[in-house]
Length: 275
Image (cartoon, rainbow, N blue to C red; front, side, top):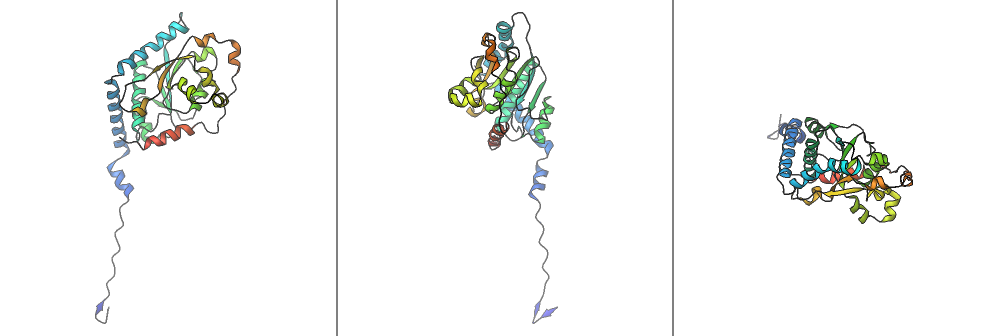
């Protein structure tokens, strides 16, 4: 149709832009992400194992069972029977989490024991990675309330004080607490930095436990201060056995609105730190 010398032309429909998500999925599939994550964890492990502090780490790990047998059970043969880890972080997105995961692997291979892990922010890629590394992913939030069966090493890298407090409360008697090895934030530093009133009101078991563990710091494992700063190996010492029976009677269960809050806050901030 023409009108006054002008020809009307129908406009072509604009091409629909390809979804950015589709393009992203073509570039980086879950399987690709899994392989990349595994490679980065192994790289982090190599950095730790060639670090200045690795020999000291190995010496400290070697000393755990020896000290438990010497101090707590001279007529027994105590060995670590399992590892439980809370709050590891998103291995697929966080540099800090990958270094912590590498350390968990080193500890796991040192003791050659079953290892379980839980974090509320694990992605499907994280779960696949951990299962590939022969680490069982828990599907329930225990809130740190795991009672030991045998001697258990708990790995809680930079977790909230609530989890440490819950773990101590759950095992609050000398026969159980003497079988808890805890790799995590220094109890003595927490007690120094938190007002006594707050400790007694909210973190009573950390407050009481500070002198019942020997602390061995992790130093010079990586060049990043934010990975293992203030993370210590806590080994039960003879003070656990020296407490009077009345000491253990103060064992009211701690109550918090949400025991995941500090884990999630910490780990979500770590996701921004990409390698």
